[in-house]
Image 1 (cartoon, one colour):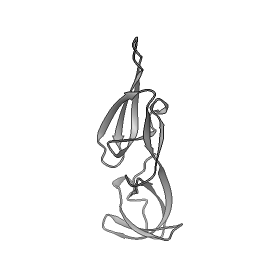
Image 2 (spheres, rainbow, N blue to C red; image 1 turned 60 degrees about the horizontal axis):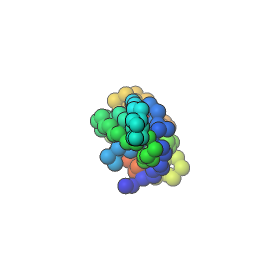
Image 3 (cartoon, one colour; image 1 turned 90 degrees about the vertical axis):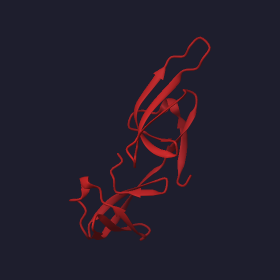
Length: 131
């Protein structure tokens, strides 16, 4: 897998946190903990939504297991130009130029010469708000 990830206990996840399911970064929407039986461990069911494809994913795991969590980097850039529905950006730290799709919800905020934040998750960059 490309990108940075960390590990955390599945029992520590809450709605709004992030997890990697099927090699895809997701936002946790629901956490259900089932009580343990006479000889079994408690189980945790996670329901999550993919950050980039908006597909629902779920997983069930014992409460003592650790899961992968993506490291989300928020970076600042300057808008160099807008070509169609893409923005040409220059990272304000590395001066690297990149081209990203402009989501409909922020089309009016992206102006040439202005500054805008973008997110990098597991090597994928997006202007889409992830919080």
